[in-house]
Length: 157
Image 1 (cartoon, helix red, strand yellow):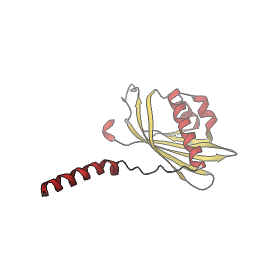
Image 2: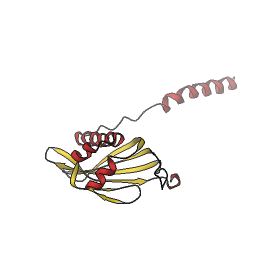
Image 3: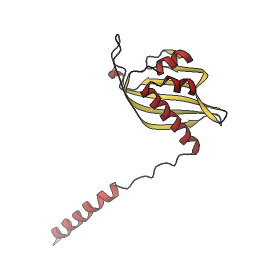
């Protein structure tokens, strides 16, 4: 009889565990500012994929700077040329976050899987990278003031 109770209890607990494990934490509701900046960053990502130099000319500030995954600092025109001719095969962002820095500035940060055609003298860039973008308010819109790519897995060089 005791064995029957043990078996019944075990079966009952086993049937409860999957429903407990499937309980999800509700997603964070994004503020209008977060939605706008994440949308702007996703537009930047799509423009990178398409080598859309015209998008960069419209979107970056006059004093824009970029630090590439190789650590090289590029000023506005060099950066536009680099962003508009990327040779990207894949750029898949995940874990996008917005950190506000007052009313007129914010940092958008995320990780991404990157695949790019190898360069002649270096080979492919790191597959996993962390990106940070500084966006500043410009009239009714937002301009990209700074962008940095950082390798997250050094063994991927």
